[in-house]
Amino acid sequence: MLSAVLVEPGRFEFEEIPEPEPGPGEVVVEVRSALTCAADLRAYRMGLGSPGPLGHEFAGLISRVGTGVRGFREGDAVMSAHSAPCGECFPCTRRQENLCENLPRNMAVGSFAEFIRVGAPIVRQNMFPKPASLSFAEAAFLEPLASVVQGLESIPLEPEDVVVILGCGTIGLLYLLTLRALDQPLRVLMAGRGRERLELARTLGADRVIDGESESVVEEVRQATDGLGAQVVMDCAGQPETWAQILDLAGRGSHVLLFGGCPGGLPVELDTTRLHYDQIALVGTSHFTPRAVRTAHELLAGHRVRPGPILSGTYPLRQLSQAFERLDQGQGTKFEIVPHATEDPGE
Ligand SMILES: [Zn+2]
Ligand SMILES: [Zn+2]
Image 1 (tube, helix red, strand yellow):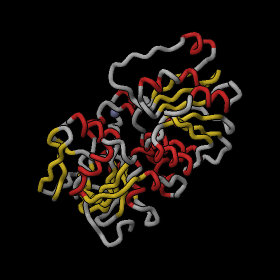
Image 2: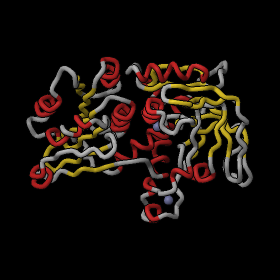
Image 3: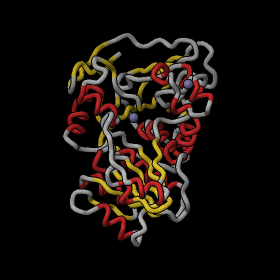
Image 4: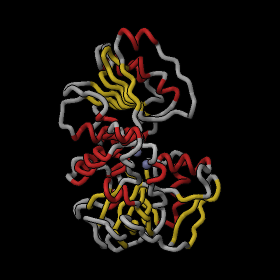
């Protein structure tokens, strides 16, 4: 089968390698749609893990089933997260499976290929049937949407809260769509950069879109909240300059969700008086539990979250480099890669 391998920073090579074999409890999925992710772009730029396969957001058809697999058969259309918890380590026993110590061992990576092997813990916990009404591309959003659901579950929300989302990339936009799916009169303000992304935020239902390049996010949020600040601030940008702003946007008794990771080991300065006396909670979030994956599956399968418009285009596998070159130049948000060209790509 054909597989893309990152051989050095910024360069993929295409290799013919043997098709994977499913072990006990495992399945092999014929990839119908694989999506690029910010983590892939980071790896592409830095050559992280190279040489190695990239791609972990995918949906497809089960081509082979290992012994002992229950609930799935050859030919089933499926959507899957790329990892699953072990259920036995310390965080798992505390029901913090998103922090499972054995996640790296239970990962399915390399979806920029014709086939991908999905391990037994994933098949058991984080793989689901794809309804025919859902395209493979939208189904492939299961993993990033699960991360988003995980974050939302860790903060309280009142129906009329003001939520500020910093960052109009895939994650910021998925937060917007998920908040809208709650069907509450929340006011969602989004701040980001780039005309294309800001426009997308507007069409996907943000009440106010703030251009971080030409407007002051702090001033706009203060004005929109009569000086009170927001009840929820979500950082989906992962930039030191957005982290530096969070307390200026957060109201008393608010929650700040920290989704976007800054470069490792970076210190930030925070006003202790505001944190303490204004009771502002800083909440980190990472990865997802099987419960979050189930919720994400329900949101996608029930068409309550429709992430399709976030995609900026589709490339065949052989043109994977073009998708990454565009992302590297700041063009587009997320691309779909299709290893198997079919007559009916959406099914
Ligand atoms: Zn991802
Ligand atoms: Zn574990």
